[in-house]
Image 1 (cartoon, helix red, strand yellow):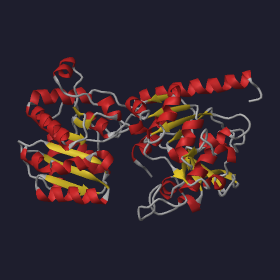
Image 2 (cartoon, rainbow, N blue to C red; image 1 turned 90 degrees about the vertical axis):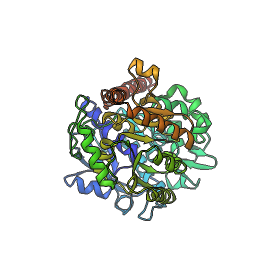
Image 3 (cartoon, rainbow, N blue to C red; image 1 turned 120 degrees about the vertical axis):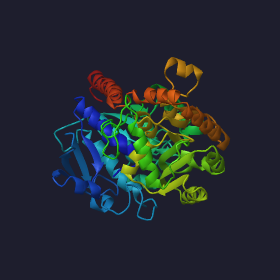
Image 4 (cartoon, rainbow, N blue to C red; image 1 turned 90 degrees about the horizontal axis):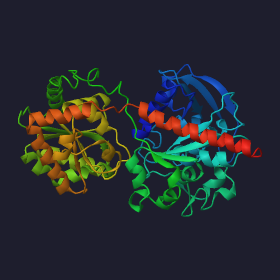
Length: 481
């Protein structure tokens, strides 16, 4: 069960923290695929209805392949369903998502307090995005010794907003529904709860931490985030460098590394074959793997597709999302058979081949909290072409005379989210591709960068240490707390 970058960090960051010696537990809903993946999970606690309309549930424990303890919150009526984590088989939000993730939040808070049925107690509760945003609120209203809390924002556009009357069903006290609590324009917001009650707020890149304090990117919370500026920090996500490694990637027909890039051509040939493109030595291959939504900026291609074909350049796209955009992009590809190809759906192995076989990777996002594909691309010697936003701005350095001279250039960056700006940058990138010496420099500049999770884990550990010590000091100074 995985949903974009949130799925990546929920798996990879705990693994890096565990490897660094942090005594960690990972709490996730016991979705059907997880129960199937961990058949050895043992029950460690049975939890009675924790308040409101939240049902009884049980806690199972197992370990990940890396050895980190994994806690599965088992509630069959909530989590054993067809569909994804949030949507039913028809692509609609589950109508009881407030209860499903209210339960996750309540149990997370319970395990982080003296009321926990487990002998192990955390010093810090780290919550990721709105699905567990109520946990800091629940913890705030609990008595006794409690863990410090961190709230991580992965995408401010998703906020978990529900009708005001859900407050009672979630078992929260009336006083929580205020401007200084979970209330947001007369409704209840899981995201607002986390942003207000958590001791620290983090997000997934330094640039995004700045952007969400503006009205354009704050989605109604810019004022609250500016007020909490001193508690907000951006920490760039990492990538799993064992899975994303062109020297060992099992999905590639030919392995390669930055000192020996010839193997990349074999992957380009294989990618063209998989997508039904013609073999044209004079044409660079543009690749994209993403959700097909307006956020990702792929609609910008619709107005310039014919011009891209005339450059000439080829294009492959793998993804799924907005049905209208899927149809429009597929129609664009049909107008240029053998040159453009769109594959609707997701195939993990094929995603790896797109990263390895493309010459240039497209990410023209209107906003991108962190982005992972640009880091995959840099590691695979595929210079990214990105818009100047969020984590893209923190990782991709535009190719120009200054950055080539100082050795930092690794891709191409444009500012305005317009078809004209994107087309101009594609033309600039294609011109650079024809200069093989320059292109090899860009590839090597990207491939030698370290995007592993170790630096992010170190930064998070420093935050955990600081807020947990502050919490303990407060209890010592004020024993009644």
